[in-house]
Structure formats: structure tokens, C-alpha cells
Length: 297
Ligand SMILES: [Zn+2]
Image (cartoon, rainbow, N blue to C red; front, side, top):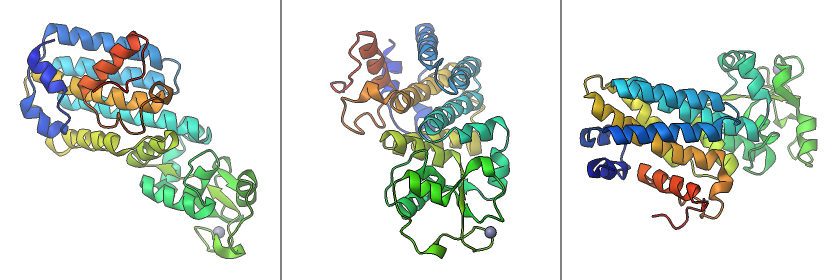
């Protein structure tokens, strides 16, 4: 590989800082990226929302070749979102998938059933369940309590009684301590809340025991490319290298999310926030059948 490109792939700084250092891409690097997208697509095809992730990579490639950085990076951001959504739904409840299919997700958000941050959700889960374990039961505690009269979203709600029964716990709190979001009467149900993108990323990481900070950082960086900067005046050869570096960093992160078993021998967090170059090493290890990437530096 071209030395300047290789050096750039070892750079882990934010997209905005890295942009000025990006070397132009060449034919062999573009071919390599095409090959990687095909390989990753093969792994993703049976994963929940895998088709969306494949589309994000392909559309990102096309836009990067044409020199449209904001469109290419928007696809990278979509890839992060979909991978997180996939892991989050798989490890919590199908009800979230239903909310998407029925296009009711945004209606719940409009009525205030929203998780604004991972920390907010974990605090609520700990408050009501006594642990920070995020699963198909405890995720309801990150939602909002409602009384019998104010129960509107039955498909996305479970009774307080049933939740504690599932957990094998007696409700510790005094009777009126869990009160309805609307009228402060005793709540009988918890209705799921819909996580914002950053909360989704944090909670997806939490369900597989991965540190969320580097994925959150990548997401925030991509958002800044789109707003306020835009970067519509870069030469297209450079645009490709910038997008590709971000995609490879994202692929390393979401492989840890989607296929945590591949990383089970590496200590927790040791692959967190690693470079695009590290992904290429991980990929090589996978090819050689030594998917354990612990020895990779
Ligand atoms: Zn009420």
C-alpha cells in the first residue's frame, strides 16, 4: 500500500483534524476498499438491519469516489446507527422493531417517551431494578411509568407487576413511589422510551460490555462534518481517503458490537478506539483463521 495512505490510516484523530493531512487515494486502495465492503457485506447479510448497513457502505463508496464527502460521511453515520440499532433490538425487545415497522417510533418520541442519553437510561434502570444490566425486561424501566387510565401504547408496555415478577424481585418501593408520567397517580405500567442516536450507541455497547466512548466520538465527529462544516471543496481523491479511514475505524468498532465472540480473548476495551490500520490487521487475522486480535498492536 502507498506509504502516505498507510500512515494516514494509523491516524486516529477526529475527522475534522485529519482532513488537512489526508493524502490522495490511488487505484489499488480503492480496489481494496471495494473488496472489504463485499467481505463485510457477506458477514452482515443475515444480521438484523444488515441490508441497511450494506447499502450504507455501498452508497458511501459511490459518493466518496465522486468526491461528495458529506454524503459519504452521512452513510458512515447511518452505518453506526444501524449497527447500534441492530445490537440494541437484538439484546432488548422486538417491540422496538415493531415501533419502526409500524412507523410509531416518532409518535412515542413526540409524546415524551424518549431516552436522551445512555447515562439517563442506566440511572433509571439502576433505580428500579437495582442493577445496570440492560436487557429485554430492564429496558422498560428506562421508559416512562403510566397509570391504567393513561396507558395508550399497550404494544410497548408491560405491567409493573409483571416486570418485577420477571426479575424475580419483590417491588421494594412503597406503593406510590412509581407514579404516572401524566397524573402522578400510582403507575401500573412502564411504556418503552425511544433512544436518541447517541443513547442508542451507548446502550448497544452496554449490552455487549463494550466501552461506548470511541463509537460516540466517531459519531460526533461525523455529525460535525455534516454540520456546520460541509467540506464541499475538497479534491475527490482526498475525499475518498478520508471517508475510507472513517469507514475502517467504524468497521472495527461495529465488528466488536455485532460479533463480540470474535474478540472474546482480547481484554475488555483493548480494541476500543483503535485505528483504521488496526482493522486491516484484524481482517488479516480473520482470513488466517486467527480471529483473536490480542497480539495486534
Ligand atoms: Zn395517569
